[in-house]
Image (tube, rainbow over all chains, first blue to last red; front, side, top):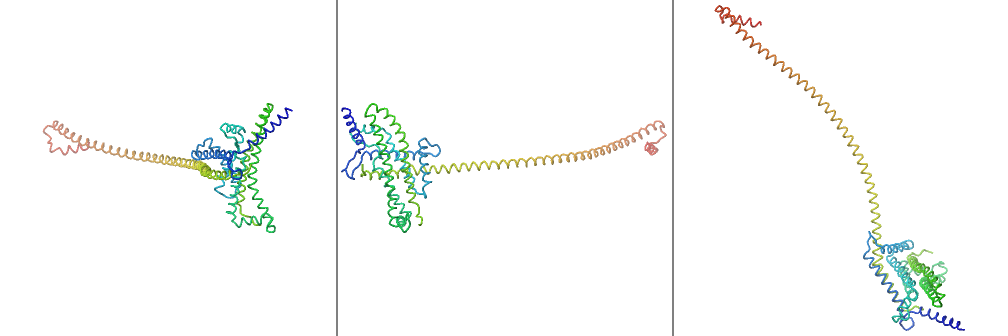
Length: 271
Length: 156
C-alpha cells in the first residue's frame, strides 16, 4: 500500500520534473507572440562567444606561426571549405560564412546538452528564475529560425540563378515532364517544403530526445539510492554518445544547407 | 512546445552572426590560407629553381675550370717554348759576342805586339847606333850610316 503510494508520488514527481524542465521561461500572451527568454539568452550568449572568438582570431591570426586556437579554427574552416568545394557547383561569397556559422553555432547550442541537466536550472532557482531550458536547439523556434532562413535563401537563389520563369518551370515540368503538370506542381511543392521542415525537425527531434533521455537518466538517481549506479553508468554512456550526436547534427544541418543551396544554384536541365 | 516569436529573434541573431563571422573570420582566414598556400607553392617552386640553377652553375663552373686548365697548360707550353727559344737565342748571341770579343782582343794584341815591335826596333836602332858609335868611335857618322842601320834593324 505504502509502496504503491510512493510509486504514484514518484511517478507524478517524475512527470512534473520532466515538464518543469521542458518549460521555457517565456513572456507573452501565450499564442505566437511569446519570447522564450532562456532560448534567446543562451543562443545569444553562444553567438557572443562565437563573435568574440571570430573577432579575436581574425585580429590575431598570423600566416607563419599559427597558435593552437588558430589551428583548430583553420581545421574547421578548411573542413567546411572542402565540403563546399565538393558539393557546391558555383562560387558564392555567402555560402562559406553561412555554412561555418551554422556548423559552429548549432554545435555550441547542441553542446549545452552536455552540461548536467539540473545544474543551470538549479542555479537559476537560486536567483529566482523558475523555468529554464538551457539547450536552445530543443526549442522549435531556434531550429525553424535556421531552417526558414535557409529556405528563404533557397528560394532567393533559385529565382536569382534560374530566373522567375525558370523557377516556375521547375514547378511545372519537374520531375515528370510536361504531360503531368498538376502532379509536378504538387510533387515539387512538397519537395521544396520538405526541405526546411526536415531541417528544422531533424535537429529539434534529435536534441529534444537527447535532452529527454538525459532527464530520464537523471530521474533514475532521484528515484532511489539503487538508481544512482545505473544513473552514473547510463549518464556517462549517453553523454559520450551524445558528443557524436551533437557534432553529427551540426554537421548534417550544415551539409544539407550546402546541398540545398547547391541545388538552387544548378541551372535547370531541359526535359 | 510551439513556434513562437522567438523565431524572429533567432533569425535576426542568425543573420547578424553570419555577417559577423563572414566579415571577421571566414573572409580574413580564407584569404590568409590562400595567401599561405600561394606562398608555400612559390617557395617550393623557388627552391626547385634554385636547385636547378645550382646544378647549372656547377656544370658551368666545371666547364670553366676545365677550360682554365687547358688554357694554363697551353700557356705553360708556350712559355716553355718561348723560354727555350730565348735561351737558344741568348746562346747564339753569347757565342757571337764571345767570338767578336775574341777577335777584338786578338786584334788589340796584334796591335800591341806590333807597337812593341816598333818601339823595340826604334830602341834597337838607337842602341845599335850608340853601340856601334862607341865601337867604331868617330868612324861612323850617325847621319851617314843611319839608313844602313835602319835597314839592318828592319830585317830583325
